[in-house]
Length: 138
Image (tube, rainbow, N blue to C red; front, side, top):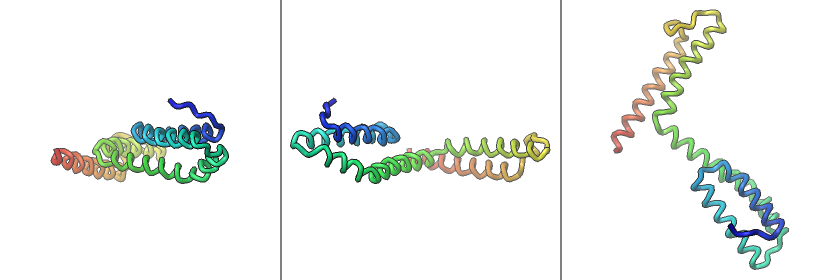
């Protein structure tokens, strides 16, 4: 790793490490590499540390937008598989049984709230469609 000498550079690097911690490993490595290179080059040409720190502060909103966009993209990709819907279907049945227990009703599967069962059936149908679509693409 390249050693950064200036206080502003080190502060900007610390911010980069902090906000990229929430990104996927390849995106995190690429972003950190870009910034480290930029900070090192800026030090070599003599850009003032105060200017580097100011640029980091002004760019913080864009940095947070970048990491949020990365996380949304990852979540969207994950939701295009069947697994989350199978898990949610099971949880909806369990939640129905749990909520029935608060109402003082029996919690055996036949008495689970119909909303929980209907939700589970819908989620399982969606999971099946996504699974078949993924299998068809192979």
